Image (cartoon, rainbow, N blue to C red; front, side, top):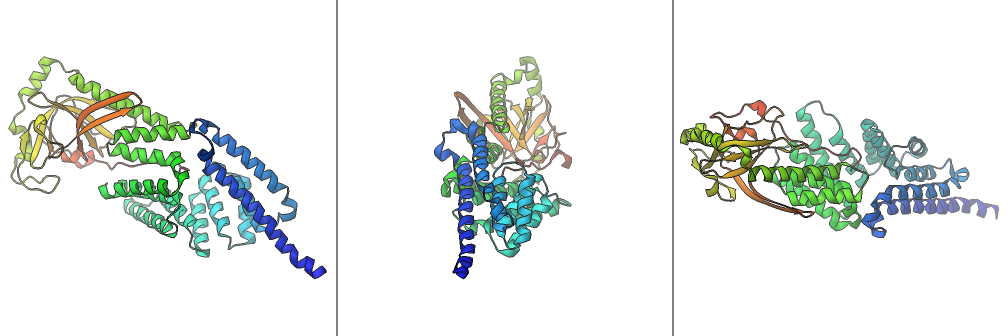
Length: 444
């Protein structure tokens, strides 16, 4: 009988520890699926409601502390419970450290401890934990977390940074392959592609891969559509791609899902103000007086093409040959191969949080257009009265409606100041600096 009681004891422990694990799992479900049971209008309560649920779960765990305080599984669940909060917890770190010391093969212990180090800002400690977990077992959580750590870690030089980002994408892709139904992993892959896009030449296919990963995240996991960071990070990519309506909707959604996070609403306001300023300056023709405008346009001629008039000129697409100057009104939407837009600068716009240097241009027919130049150094710009030639311009129409405000204007996108000719000369190499994207540190 005594033997029977003794052998039943570990089974009873296991059963009780399993119940405690399920309690902590329910806590994570409460946090991650909050908007399945609450409206977006209640978003301001999410953090405090989650904190209350954490305290309830913690109380139930502490009732069993005397019984299980030296058990690795119990310490893991207590550490997981405390880890549900967005900030670093010294108590969680202590529980999890003890947990993996007692049982070094505890993959969840290593992963959760790594997340605590991440919140603490200790990237080396986080990386060691996730790497240690992978040595025990290949798993999606360690892979996707390592992907994040690699992107945030400092690199010795630009080549090392590129290598880290490439490794980061590879790890996120491997994590997705382990579970194609995990929305969080797809979201982190999307972030990895965004980073690769800005690191490796802004190739359009990388931008598309990022957007596809974000879309897949929402498709396979209903909870993912409630990640404010997903909407925010995607909105920044939309803005860079000049998809302004989608960017504004993304910022607005992120702000609604996390009212305590100020940056999304600030970005939304900045972008609305930018669009308003652009359209007003276009309507007012840059506020340049008629007499000055006549003087500015009087010296516009074919000779203004500068190097673009040479039969040896190599265009951005690789085409060799002189370009033909065309009026803005005669340009077609999309890429105008073999042609050049020529005009005078009538205004420039320095907006807070800008992604592009923006200026207005008028041609000899007094047609106006907005020009957005990307990847510019802080020191680069054009002045009112400067003559600008845009080889093979990419022209588009922007039609945006957001919260009862509407904007409609045509623009030309230029991916680098080095593609322009300003006052007969090409800008020097120091005019260009690669654009980048930043994340809220714990956003992933």
